[in-house]
Length: 608
Image 1 (cartoon, one colour):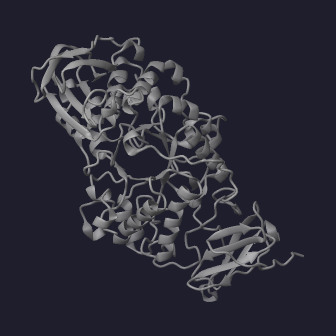
Image 2 (spheres, one colour):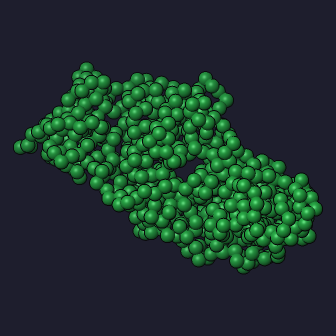
């Protein structure tokens, strides 16, 4: 005979809240007539632990027999005239699960030992983001996805590369073992196949010890659609839709199913806000990247039909970003909008979304097209120049710039080297032009982002079952070294390229015939600050080519992407230091002669 559970004093909060005397359970089920909690603590009995109806649809109880590690579920009884059997549901707030279609596990988020973790994310102008998919980043066991612990093993590699932030693709519990992560079944639980919540905390703690921030990719534009206990959670629905957590009219429709959360319902808004803040508070994450916010603010995900706007979705994002800024100042909130919408970044007080930065479609598409085009005459230097200079507001670092992301290298599109010459990613053309794009990412104003394996000239399009080929770290050590050198300059780690961290840019030399541009980057001007970047987008050398320079004196060659160091089949075309003279050119007071190889980027700066 099952021992009857004893009630105890209840604690505030949602989900399963353990303390020394047992566990408080609290759940929102406004249409339920009765709610029970059952689990390993009461031998999965169906009736001994009833929850008390508090008010406003909330139910709670304290169970002294329950403890951390016990599995549990809720049994929800809908009104009798609905003719529904008792509904067995996982806790919407559960932090840990056996699997997506399994049970919740009582978990205490306060017991993890963070040590003296007081890590602070780098300022936006010094940030280098590496987008990582845990399941394919570092796989140790064939046929199984990678884990948080296996990913941790590569943190020294990322630190040596110069990465100071990783953006992990969604780690919310999803259906099955293999996924990109954009199908969250249990938004508060960390994916069990990756190791669960403690494993993610170990990963964050280790990342911080290596000087690397962790940004969590969150999905609030839809849930599921499979293994989704939130669906008709307490039995109620309208129009055959999803019930209390979802819109129950035409607003429910998304490209991923009829599972758009109801952004206008207070309890759902609180649920999403609690989730966003959880990653920053309980997991010490350093920021969030919001997936496809266009589908939070508009039914069809577009800007051109205001009739489909979702005002409460916009106000939800404003509220969450205000909470982040108030409670976690200095942490970053990045939007994937891709509509060139300046209001995404504006302050909420001005009516904006309050995001710190957004992915910049005005950079990635023109630059990818320019380096992929097979004919030099098709490279649109004007579009590339606009991409380099583009910004949303006054702050150049309110955008994230990249040539590869999980979207850009999947869904029918390949890695940049593969796009340049399919099946020949190790070719001279693929290496030279893909790194031409990477050099623009790491010298243009904005927050640079690389996608996992990009620095290894990874050739395969992104799939959730195909891991990085780590043998390429040796095979393509030259390309890896180029990325390392570019990141060193971008972060001004050698102390002579501060301008690459600065707000200011001027594209002062533009030669569409020669497909060559030169731009000046600076923070406060002067030696070790001003940086000149020259980009040759043709398969021709340029020798004795005169361009303007901001100051007289010796400009040292800090980087030449044509160096033998980066590829034995590169031309190693000489790019000597430039002694400039006070003879104005290109609107600048001085000028000098440069030499540059084909499909090459050269970086100059001064010591004094």
